[in-house]
Length: 256
Image (cartoon, rainbow, N blue to C red):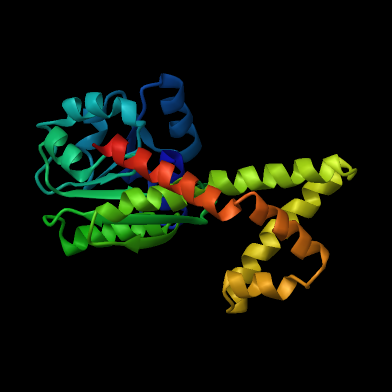
């Protein structure tokens, strides 16, 4: 996700390679980023963090404590810290970094192709200019939504953050089902992919609700009605609710 943000910043012209410093715990990763994007890579977090007005934290949650300990005391008072770390609360970041200019965001995987959606919020100390920077960076990866209450980020994590995996699972299941009824795998994949993409565009562009579109494609006594009846027998809606609730509870647990 960090590289997706980096690539988007450069592609949208928000910064030039000579103004960006990156770091990574793996030397080969640092060399890769230097060579691919033409920017400088520091060997330590402090070496990268003291270079700019915005510090993007794009690390795995299990490394957060170590990184915060390293950065604590070396951040400039007016630097903006933009976190895309899943589950890391603003309070955790403020205390661990001893810093108050914090923006916390929850992007998602389609950011890799500029089709992501990010929800974000900030501490009260973040200035209007800094909010503009954060919004521009997140907006470069797709759409962005600012909220004034951090509680919405854990909720969004369960929907948009984890959401791509739900769609991938459904696509996998559809392809498998298509093969099981006798379609060649390559044809099954093409049918499922284009159906998913086309349906997504239709929801976005038709001006109709998903429920209305579902009713339009469902003829009484027809094939679609029979398939939907099986979903209902399996309590599909309730299963989705259970999955989302479990993801939301996990997000809260990670942030506690």
